[in-house]
Image (cartoon, rainbow, N blue to C red; front, side, top):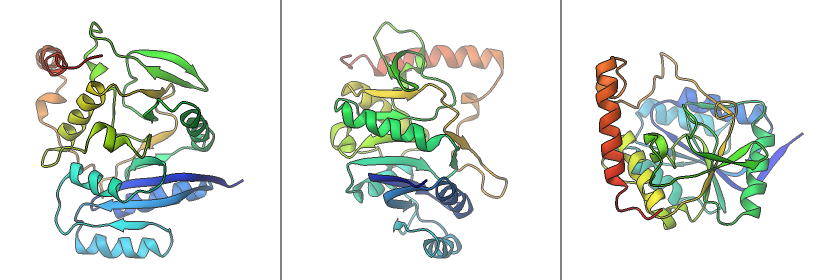
Amino acid sequence: MKNIFSGVTLLITHYNRTNSLGRLLKSFQELDCYFEDIVVSDDGSSAANQEHLIQLQLEFPFRIIRTLNNKGLGNNLNKGLAAIVTPYTLYVQEDFVPTDIFPVHFSDALDIMNANQELDIVRFFANTPYPYLKPFGKGFSEMIIKPWYTNYTKIYFYGDPPHLRRKNFTQKFGPYAEGLKGDRTEYRMCISFIQKRGKGLFFDNHKQLFTQENTEQEPSTMTRKSWTTSKNPIVSIVRYGYRQLRYNYDLLSTRY
């Protein structure tokens, strides 16, 4: 049975990982998922990858939004989003793959967004669940944030991994910060989303709709400072204290 998602553009950010991109597009095809439009925003990939993109277009119907030079995630998102005209956008990075249960739950998410105009986003994937959730229905929960909540991951009220959003998202929360590393770009949007009182849902089984798959041939392009991922107990304590202070400081100006 075909799953036709009219009014939805699939936006994929891409940089030098055309094999991963092809895998993602093929996965949607195998699930009989069809979108009104598909936009691939390329961040100045190599000539070989540009040629591969053209070959992929012969198999999959998508538009390429290019830039001559690599300008980072913020710019790649901004130019890709500017090309979208549909009411909804499903944003997926090229190293994700939808699972067999994606179509039915994505349909539910669309129905929920159509029925609840105050919602700005529905998140489908995260490495860890959002810490403060209120059951909503159909396998989704509403994300809640209050100034007295102590879990510092409350800051990730917004997240870059696969999610559904409205077309007015950038107009409401501003463009993505450019000229920064990817994790800082995401963090800036997290702050803006909270400051401007964004509202969203989180899929309860947050690792069931997508898997994230990076190969040796096409590893993740996201780099982080070693101290942010170190498992050393002392570093972990320092990191926790720093995040509590930094995140809460950044939220002092936020009206919940």
